[in-house]
Image (cartoon, rainbow, N blue to C red):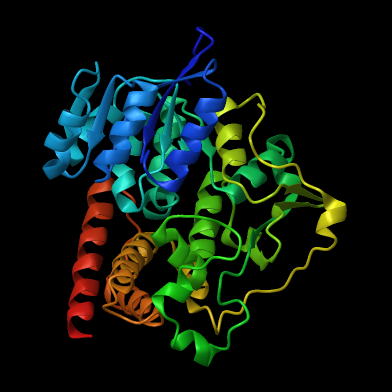
Length: 390
């Protein structure tokens, strides 16, 4: 595990213009004496990336969309910031040494940069759950081999991390993560079948990117988080479950064999788990509002409905099957969600296409990178074909 003896942590932020990246820079802004940004990357928002680069003065910035490189270069003329472009450039800068890599690239494209950062010995603040969903065994094995710490940034996994006593691992019965239930938690199955894009994007508790907001509406996000938790904490599928907690105050609970249940509570604000991962093993102040239990008044819990939200069921089944099933699950979901965001399919076509992919793509126990990439590619081609026929 890389240790910085200089006092200031060098941080590389992958996906800096997304909601997690912007929240991370809020934390850096508040604690500029503790953190130095060395790399910023973005998909195609060159304007915001240029603004961030001017403020934080990283050594290099990378825009994935190569057509935006010239505009970015022009915006940063006169700045001593190296401007790079393309997917390979993102992977290359990920391999450069730093104290902490914040992995917040959305979806499967975050896998290879994260692996490169691990191979470089960089500790990982992981906001990209798809990395572990696609290739959890491979990624965690590489992290152990390199002595790299994987620090979870998802609020649920950060909560588990704080409550999970590794010295008492054999005494842990179960881990529960919570879900707000999303915008359709009170809708009937028939209403959900007619859900429109604008309705799916109205999350009741969190402000997030479009893809994760749709995943939250379908509860696929909770399924992906269960798979992520399995790998992060080396748990069996039967040791994991999810409950709907509308207030989004309790983020996870760890159940011990003596009947004790330890939970982490906080207002729903991503800057808290980001700051925890960035400063670990210390704690630092955040701009998050303090929790007022009296004002909150009450907390409620209910079981998620697998009939109304089949994506959660499919994710649990894929987790239980193992092998490339979770890779297929993730790739199919990403393609289907992308099509829904473009209004090419309906909301309930998402689980239908995921289920079709799980049924039609051949199962394999392999978790080596070439097989993972092949399963991902084959799944995407299948779902794209299903979308074109839709």
